[in-house]
Image (cartoon, rainbow, N blue to C red; front, side, top):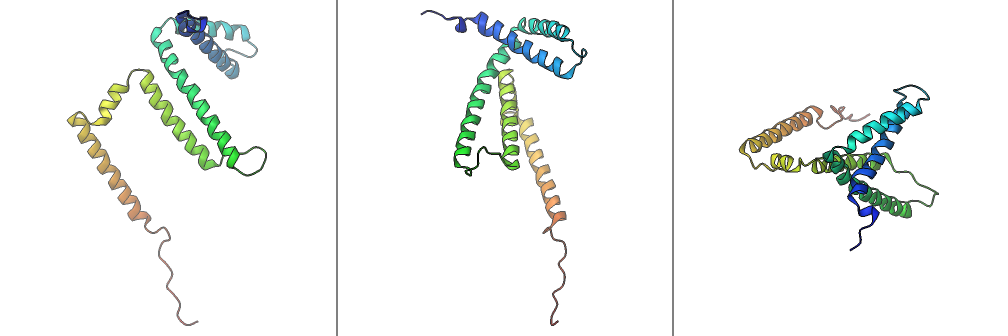
Length: 174
């Protein structure tokens, strides 16, 4: 089977991560102006050096290589949702997500990114073992956390009560 340029390890493990990191660092330096105003050459040299150092570590490029499919799939899922949402929303041209949907998406994306970063860095087995309660210490920890949360919820409900405070006495007659 003939291998293409895009399937080559040099391309996927060195060239693409180098371009990505160089572009990101350059954009950050240009936007923040840390090295001075109108210093594109200096920003480019620093970005080039950081990107070269980055690709010299296979672990770092491996993490980036594992994160990129998540980015692509997530972008397509969000695009499909937005197309379908726009299809069923009102007949206005364009649409805007409500604040509740924006917050929900932000939380879901944040959780997804945290999980994928944990997986891409190879720490998933340790984190899963901690949360699954395979150790007696973690089982005790989770039981303690559950009890503390239950107590906090009970105290909040007790102090907040019905929410309206004491009601006024009803008037009889006039």
